[in-house]
Amino acid sequence: MLLHATSLYSATGTLLVLLGFLLLARYIVRATTSPLRDLPGPPLARFTRLWELYNNWQGKLEHVMIALHRRHGSSSYPLRRQLPTNTCKARLSAWPRTATASAIQQPFAPSTVPAPSSASPISTALSARSTTHTRTSFPRRATQNTPCNADRLPTCTR
Amino acid sequence: MYSMSSLVMYEPFVDKVNSEFMAAVASHAQTKRQFDLFTWMQFYAFDVIGEITIGRSFGLIEAGNDKNGLLHAIHVTGISYGSHAALVPEIHPLCIWLQSVLPISSPWKVTMGSIGSMISERMQGESFSDRQDFLEKCTELKKAGKLDDPTMFNVIGANIGAGSDTTGITLTAIIYYLMKNPRCLQSLRQEIETAEQEARLSSPSTFQEGQKLPYLQATIKEALRLHPAVGQMLARVVPEGGAELAGRFFPQGVRHAITALHQQ
Image 1 (cartoon, each protein chain N blue to C red):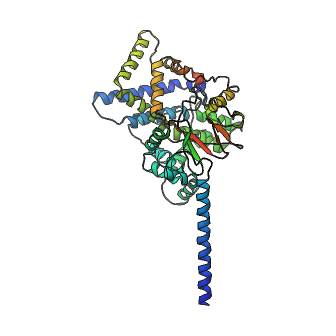
Image 2 (tube, rainbow over the protein chains, first blue to last red):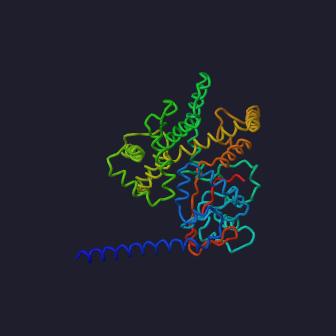
Image 3 (tube, rainbow over the protein chains, first blue to last red):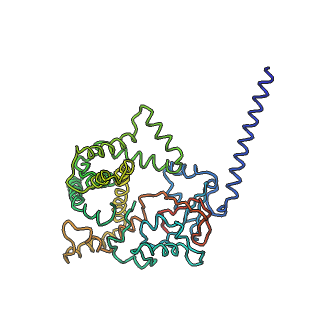
């Protein structure tokens, strides 16, 4: 009777450990075969969001981010990958200064996804969007010295 | 509701808080008392939010301290808790449930309680306002059946909970960078003085007049660039079918964000 209970107990234990290993293996396989695995960034961030949580807890996330951008940010490619696939773009210059909040909030709405183009897909996407937002025009730098008019301010700046 | 044309209508109320704030700062200067600029900027921003959201100032500048502890509660829920929970949103329902069933005092209870009572007082006609504040607009929409309770709570809650920190941080950053860069401070003063001499500024100056001062606008934007009030990224999910961004394909479901911290 005692023997029977012990073997049942150990069988359950083995099963649980096996299940744990399988889950862990699946997790690692998914992390290492992610289509975004080539993006540079801290190794730990590949596997867990706790990396970001830890740095935030330390109150230095912004310094970490700026340092990462300095290190990897020479290209306009995303540089931080994280599961479940969280990426961060380094360069903002591709983004038009005068985009309205709604254009920024939904830059990836299906209608805005451009055909692949070598120039600058993001500005293409936003230009496409500008047909529905009559106020938006997207010169990259031209607006810098133009005083903003009230209508052009994003409606939600937070 | 957040359109610029409707926000500009609140200008007189903001002017009132402006003069209160300037008086408070002047009194500090006269008595040579040190003060924490951010704290006072937050008092200012919170009083302004009160004026435009519930039709009256919270009176923090007048009191000189966070008299009801509401500002502190918002700081804890919004900044200390919110910035962490936003990274692991799965735990949020659990935290909210725990604090509601446990017999503890929680900043959530303070914040939610205050917002709830502001709304119910107005709905039941116990408090009135001399202006078309946010609460009044929401109440009208609610009575017309165009707004449900949670949305109304979110609108008022977002104003009160998120409106003061961001404004306080940005205003402080503007002053900080001006102090750090005397050359820029000099240029800004010159622009304002010239505008005053040419009678392009009234007293108090209006939003429209401020818009026509390019150096002032550049100063504000530069401070926002160097010290964005929201430091964390606001992620967007790539829609079905994936998307190509900056020459790279991203599969659907990827959370993608651009940081506001760009200092290159």
